[in-house]
Structures are given as C-alpha cells and as structure tokens.
Image 1 (spheres, helix red, strand yellow):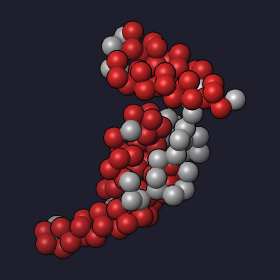
Image 2 (cartoon, one colour):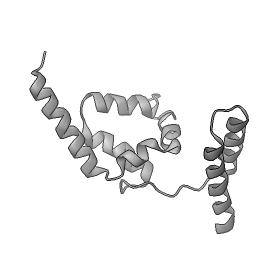
Image 3 (tube, one colour):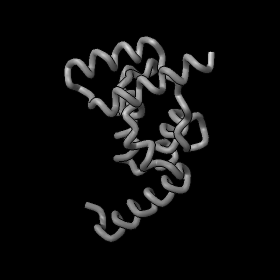
Length: 120
C-alpha cells in the first residue's frame, strides 16, 4: 500500500497538470458531444475511448488524459465548434422522442445543425 499523503500529492499534481494542459477541461467534460465521443470505439484497440481514458486516469497519466481532450477539441484544449451532421440530427430526434435527451439539448442540436446549413 502506498503512503496516503504521497497518493494525495500525486493526485493533486495530476489535476494541476491536467488543468494546465487543458484550460477548459471542466467545460468540455460536461459537453454531451464529449460524452458521446468517449463512448465510441477506438479502431486500433477495440476499446471505447472511455475505457482508455479511465486507464490513463487510474495511472494518473495527465499527458495521456489531456491528449484525449485535445484530440476531441482540435488540439488546443478548448471546445471546437463541431457542426452537426444530418445523421447526428436524426439520432438526436430519435433520442428526444425516446426521452433520452431534454428539449433544451435537442433545441441546441437543431440550432447547431441550422448553423451548418447557413455556412454551406
């Protein structure tokens, strides 16, 4: 068993390094798109990104965890503006009908899809 004080110090260092590497980590962490992205299978490992990030978290590997956030957000640790695809809108519509997402979440997805249409 490790020293409890050392464990707490290591955990504090981990979170400090993570917050430094990804300034908007707590904003990204609440983003439904992030959670959906984490649920996707990594084609190289056959594991979900959620499984992979949990492994890195358990090892207090701040660099590896930060890389997940940076990959998702386009490299800078800030959420990228990700335009909604027709397939994503269709899935959101099905999720709304089934009660899996709130009206507010659905409206945001519809608004994001509308942005996509106006940019093309």
